Image (cartoon, rainbow, N blue to C red; front, side):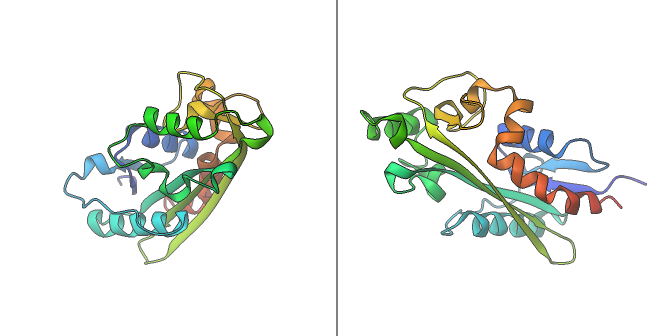
Length: 200
């Protein structure tokens, strides 16, 4: 009998790899949206991470016919009144690269002391199940914004986010070091027992 299928509702190869690593070995066939090019793109227009994650998971489940796991996450900077927040992916425009997005944040914080650079990553993950239920979990991690990008790893805003526990940016960590500290890793750890049940 073939293994049950789970679709991770992202076509972002960096995020897919990170989610795979966080979930660890599972007796499941795990696919991404790259395996379903006909699946419609979902507009992330909700006001909070959980609603966006739920919307993406439900749409992916409808398009693929398989249980689907989606996430939405963002960087919240206290001195910027929580921006970019739920609009992190669209900060400065959809077509703006993360290098430019980070430069915009660093420019806005120029001259600010470390004590005024507090920030956090938040993530919500949603699992749309075959019976119609949607399970949502959330994770967060605290830190501050660096004065310049540091590190060659990670993706997104990782080079400017200094984790409060380790004192390093997420981009300075190996993936397996980053996961236990990260917002996405913490949210996925909470939802993993529900995913494991899919294989039973």
